Each structure stands twice: as C-alpha cells, then as structure tokens.
Image 1: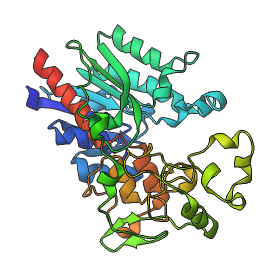
Image 2 (image 1 turned 180 degrees about the vertical axis):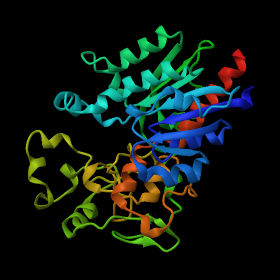
Image 3 (image 1 turned 180 degrees about the horizontal axis):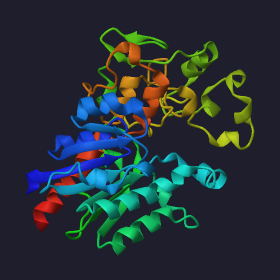
Image 4 (image 1 turned 120 degrees about the vertical axis):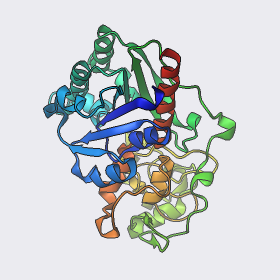
Length: 351
C-alpha cells in the first residue's frame, strides 16, 4: 500500500515540492499552476503532467480523474505567499484576489477527499488574527475529519543551506500526523561555503563557461563600488563611504534596512531566497568574496535544487528576472523530501 501513494500538487511552480516527493518514492500524478512558464521545469524534472489552469476553474472531479482507483490520494499545495505579507495585508487585502486561493484549496479538499493534505506558506499567515484565512483553513479540515498538525519549520534544521522559515501543515484522515524531527543541528548546518564554494569564479554580468545558469546580473558602476566596500555580514551603514549611501536609507525609516546590498557570510546558511534574490539591492544577496550578486545557480542551490535540475530547455529561454521569481517562490526540494517521508512514515503506522 505504501507504494501506492499518489499526489497532486496545486500551485506547483517549477516543481520543488513535487521533485522532493518523487525522490522519496511518492507518485506525482500532476501539478497545477496558472503560470505556463513553469511547464518545462515541472514536467522535465518531476515526470508528471503540468496543468496550466486557474485553481478557481478546476473541479474536484477533474482532479479525482487523475488518481488511480486504489491509490492513496495526497493533495498538496503552496498558495502564492505575497498576499499574506504584512504589507499586502495592510494595503491590498480587498484588491488582491489571491487571498481567496486558500479558500479554493479548501474547496478542492472537500471535493477530492484526499487521505493526506499538506500546505506550505509564509509564517506571517499565523499572525493575521483579524483576517483568519489560515484559521478557517484549519477549521475546515478538522470539520471534515482530519487530524491537523502545523508549525514553523526552519530550513537549516533539515540540511537546507538557507535561513528560511516556513509554515508547514500536515493533515490526515487516518490519525495523528507530524513532520519528522530535524536532521541537523546548528553545529552542522550546511553553510554558504559548503553549498557554493566549489563553483567557478565569475564577475558581475558574466556567465560561467561550464554552466549557463551560473550567471550573475550586471551591476552598475555605483553598485560595483558599493559591493566592493561591503563586508561579509556587514552593513552599508558601517561599511560604505557617505557618497555611496542612498538618500532614502539616510532617513530614519530607511536606517532599518541594514542588509540590503550586503554580502553573505561563508560560514552560515544563506539568507532567505526571495523572488529578487539575484539583485544586491533587494537583500543580503552579495557573494561573500566576489564583487557581484549571487548567480541563478547559486540561488537554486541555496533552495536545495540539485545541480542537474533543468530549469529551461536551452540558453535562449533563460530570463534572469523570471527564473529568479520561479526559484524564490519554490518549495525547497529537500523540504519536499522531508514532507514526503513524513507522509510515508505516517501511513506505515496507520495502514
């Protein structure tokens, strides 16, 4: 029976979660996403069908048709996290239709009736007491007879070289379920050095001759001066000459953004990868030694994608901004593996 687990991945993106499931032996039947540019990476790496459709328009009957007759149904998803940021909650709650996506996930759970459900999202989803979209999601699961577990998961605890915190939920019709315990401790967290220290040296705007994804964005002359004055783990407030500091950051509010234009430290996991992780002006995304922002390949490695993961079919298809968004939005595959293993171990106990 354990070999008969089948999953459908809602909001699948380029397949980080599905790839992790595939690695541990869960049969991924399909992934659904509204962004057609994710198709190649998902289908090529996950060996599963990509459904380019809006979740608002798909039905439970359509999803159920993808499962085999005797398969143990698993339904998973990571709704886009941007609407659940603090900024979006304060400013765009009524305008941003993506708030409804978690409700649509609930609708499909009711229609599909999977044995196992999993959801991954930003930790701030727990903080919206006046906008209880997550609480409603949990209550809906419990009302349908699911045992529900959720917690904030710290990625380095599972061998992911990135200080990423995510809300992970697991729910089961069979009995109590939870994520497997951490595999790593602070003494053996995977560091930036261990993750990318062996890659070719490249300059700002250059591409490695051995890997076209090991490509760094071109820095302006002024940003090149800024990165040269930046120290690993340091801050523009301490490290830069005054003429390099931005006017907005000299203001009281701007002084709190100390990590932008910063360099990573070799001996720690990287900062959280975002959709803008290949630009130094968006966070601490500077290489520890080389005068540039991290490359697409480095960003993908920090997300725990293997070096042979196929993101685009050919070099002509490579778009830095688009792929940065895909990588930053992805569920780290190693986290997908842990979620998958947790599901398998749970089912072994109850079947």
